[in-house]
Length: 628
Image 1: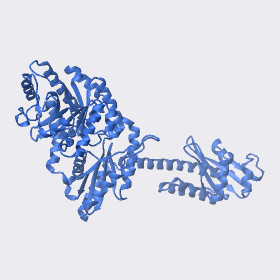
Image 2: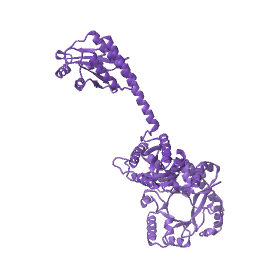
Image 3: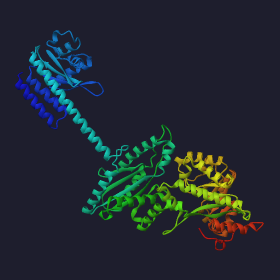
Image 4: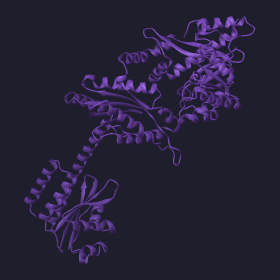
């Protein structure tokens, strides 16, 4: 080997490095050139991987690659020695070698005569070894050995640079993936979603075909995290993402835009029926229980989905997302586990919701909200047994806001607990003021509605105790009405929270019994003192034997458990007479009195104070006081 030949090989290596060649390309070119440049049969390269293990990554032919591997298997050989000692190792005749009693006979039996190994080193690091093979015993000159080490050193430098280049490329790829994907599920993130949504809207304008945008939110997912922990919640999100993918076509986009919110974009649709079919597939995909604990019962999740069939006329991606999001919240207000088409929502309705969300916090602080009270009447005596506090908000521009819309706005704005504290404090303050006024026949108890979102907050019982202490109202004068239907996932935590309230001496009422998730099992699971029959039992109670039988069975069961029953929605004397025959102890409804503000209720309490025997209040037309 002369200097000219060595220079030519080095120039070719430099060309290899400046091109877009991988580490494997560089090593393959190295072994090919060395076999021509030096009097050897072939060459191979050993590299040390990041874990400290050795592996041969290149050889001039498969037979040499297998022979190289023998050194790693046997744990000895000139290549390993060169790497470990950082010096050249020459075995000029394998048939008589005694340095490697295991490797040399195996290599000679495979047809090799000599082996020469050179360390691959870069700076202070050793990264592997270069090995040259000859089919016959041979002695390399000092010049050839120096040339072999020079090639090894240059190769090691080039490999170090190539490794840094590939590492930088991998890092750039990871950064690009991190910028475009959700780290938990691997789905597209919000930034990618907007790009694809914008492209979809443009294509819709060109092709005339519609696209479906679906905003999906898991119902009551916070309760899952609170009960099972965020690690379980994350595992469920990953499984849910997999199920959602299974509902879609390869060209559809699925993105995770926040904790439990997913967005789907489907293009090239011809009508709304296709979008509805997809929404139904998504809901069905959640019907199969998710595994939570090993061997334990599965957990069934549900979703609220806002669907919008869109085209270019729906404006920007943000405009489209706002419409789909509004439809999703409408699905939540209807009880969840369903989809609502944005086409069914009017612009006036959506603007009203946005205004409610924007103004609610200020309304709470400014005292714009108020409570109305409706009496609860003892059916046998006609006396007042208590009052129920009902939330009211008369918006300055929008007029009366329905309580479910106020609660939905509070949930969207993160004001649920702030609103709950205000309602509870106001009701307890009013009730205690009535008790302190000598000219009033104050109600024995005040009933306050509490949603399960409020109830499941860890500090709820503490907050109730603080309000009672602040207002001075005895715990025995407060009844907490649980107003929402409790899903099975919340039942254990709900029972624990209700036990805490009962421990304070507060009575618990189960509202809207007979609908949704309410069931007879809750009467055993929860410390229930009062059962409020849903008005649907009352409206049909006076004619249908089946309704009578159901109502009668509920009353008998409640009586056996020592639970007081209240019939809601009593509007006629016939209904009142009928529930009296069924043995229902108390009633509430417009027959007795419309909900009135605290001042109006005080006027009614003064009227009843002059009677030695309080009677049922007159019908709504004569009840007096402003309606709530």
